Length: 226
Image 1 (cartoon, rainbow, N blue to C red):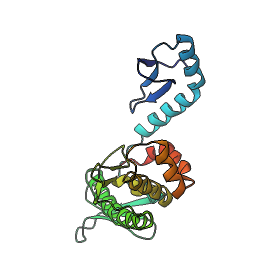
Image 2 (image 1 turned 90 degrees about the vertical axis):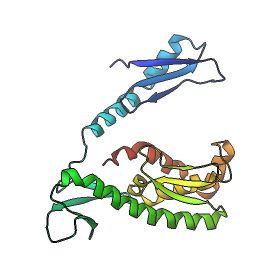
Image 3 (image 1 turned 135 degrees about the vertical axis):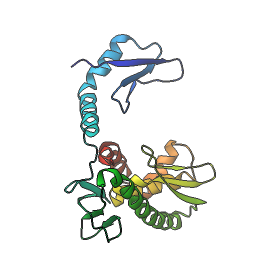
Image 4 (image 1 turned 180 degrees about the vertical axis):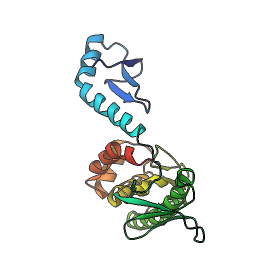
């Protein structure tokens, strides 16, 4: 399989070749301006298997949009749980989680399902993340001004210049230890705004296994779709 890619050459201080794969599976190679074409092609060949696996995973995920039907699996705190759809007119419409199963009461789950799940996830994310931020802020003596829950699709968390923390509600689908990593990551930006070597050393001092959680987010988070 030949890899089609867009080449971007940089005149800045870039010293290494890197690659990016967009959400629509377009491959971009970034290289120092005077890098020989043969070296770039060799780099692409070495990365070919990884590129193919990544693109196939993206294609697979794009074909698995939720239909909100009985039996579908939805993630919560790193585990998947089945959905049961029903409609009881005299009962309150919406989503509940009970005994390791989601129950959705709706006359048209295909239309209402996503909004009910988003509302439920946001509520749980606010409860869990507020608690974990409070725990680690006391432990690290780092106090954020505010904690917000957002609908960000790609960014798990952020820390503003004013030390306001924001987290995507989708983070509540990840395992607790991965959520803790993101919380520690954003809290540590109160102390160090950039992703410098000092920043990562600060993270490692608190969470020596942080690279495992960081890798997990990169490899597994694509399945947290709604």
